[in-house]
Every structure is written in structure tokens, then in C-alpha cells.
Image 1 (spheres, one colour):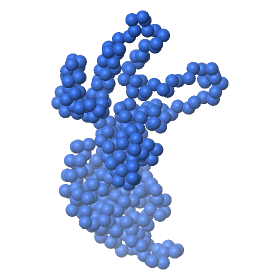
Image 2: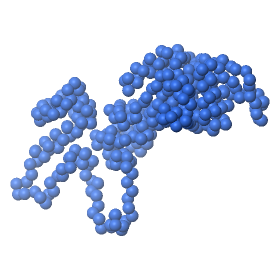
Image 3: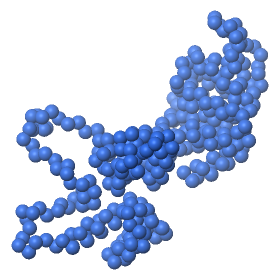
Image 4: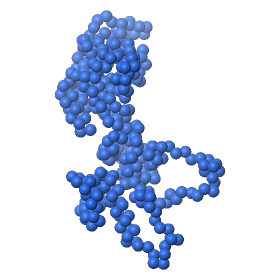
Length: 351
């Protein structure tokens, strides 16, 4: 993402070259396009977006190029198209991969000749516009299959920008969550205060098919339901607790869910399940006459908490201390006392 931010800065300086932004749905392609425009010399003029997939083909042409008076039945007045409206600024063509071949040819002329003809007009109109296109499709594959013009593809792909999906930058998830919580708090009187450690771990492991947009929607969802509270693991919707797998509950009395099947004990805190690494607490029935090693068990559990917190924060002790609600110096003392050499070795350079 840091490399992407540097690229955006360089693209903004050169306000002529066409840009092709590629990435999955929900990764923030339009946000990148707006950032390029806002940091360029064109920022004083219009940024004009149009979604090529959302507008029918017969309407998309007139939306892009406009039309002359009398061009067709009902055209009682001339209409300015988006290309002309973006003159001096930037035209953002979202989902360019859904544009039909006829319009691809007309767009190619705009890029080559820097002029266009409104529908029903024979007079070409010069235009100074920077085209920023975006798609979630593989345009190179579409070119090979004959579904996208090769000449237009290379005109668009002067400077390609690839936005990584959220699952490939999981370290950004806590930062994005914090940002969305603060943004939501500006719109609502009260929002939730954050996620507990177990919930945060589940969110870091979730595949995020909807990317950043899905994460933002979850934050809005949680802010409505858990205003003023910390969201626990058990508070998360099922798919986030199950790693993205929707689990259906069979009807009672069936072979998959017999009525006399033992119920699941949901009273055990999720943190215990998360940090126990499969180990279970000794049941009262198994205690011998000497009792249990209380201090030993507590020490072991504390160690697991610290190790897991360091894993979640990728060795960042400052962040781990924050997750555990400990002072950083206290956490460092515990790490030293417990001689967690593996963590020390693998978190070198961390705060």
C-alpha cells in the first residue's frame, strides 16, 4: 500500500497519461481515482465518474458523448455528455470491461484524437480530459478472447495500477477498523468502542471477499447493534466467526442433529477457546486430593495470551500491550521473565 501511495503521487504529477486501475470489487478503485485527480493540476476542474456496467448500452453512449438537438425522437434540446463536462478535468470510467465494442471504438478516438462527436452531430468537439479507467475483470484475458479491443487496452494501460485485495494486506485491518470507527462516530452520536482480542483475530483470518467495502459495512452494522460497547467474538455474525463459511443448522430430530445430542457450552469465554490451543481446563471430577496447580495454570494461560497477542500484532509489543490492556513496560517484563526467546527473536525491530 505504501508503494501504491507513492505511485498515486507520481501519477498526479503527470496529468496527461491514461491510468488503468485494476482490483477486486470493494478494494477502493474510485478512491484511488479521486486521489489521483485531487493531487493533480486538474483538481480545480471536474472529476466525472460513470459506471459502464450500471447504464444500458443505448443510454451509455448519450451519457458519455451527449447528443445534438433532434438527434432522435424526444431530443428537444442538446445535452452535454460526461466527456465534455469533464473537459479540463478527469473522466473516471468505472468497470470499463463491461463497455460494448461499438463504444470502445468511439472511446478510442477520444484518446487518440482528443475530440469526440455528440450523438446526431457531424461536428467534432475538441476536449482536454484525462481518462482514468477501472475494472475488476482481467482485460488482458478478454483481449485474447476477442471480447475487448486490443488497441484500446494498450491505450488505457499506459500506467497500470493494481490494488491488492484486503486478504493480502491483513496488517491493515486493525488500522482500517480504527478509521471506520472514528468515521462512524462523526455520523452517529455513539458507536461501539472496538473489538476484543478474539473478535479481532477472527476478523484478521476472515477471507474478505467484499474487501474494504465489506469491512466498512460490518463496522456500520456493529455500531448500530453494540453502541458504546466492545464487540466480542460471539457478537460477530456467523460467517465472521466461521471463517467465511456459512453453517446451516439441521432440523432437530434428524441424523445430523439428533434431539438428544449434547448441547454446546456457549458459556465458556471465546478468549479461553482462542488461547487454549486445544487444551482443556481440568474438570472438577478429575481433581485429585492434592488439588490443582493454580499458579501454574494461570501462568500458562497468561503465557498463551501474550504469545497470541504477539502473533496477532506480528511481534509489535506496543500494539500487543494495547490489546492486552497492559503497559508496554509491564509486557516487556513478563516477556523477559517468561524467557519467550522465540518471540524476541522473531519480533526484532518491533516497537
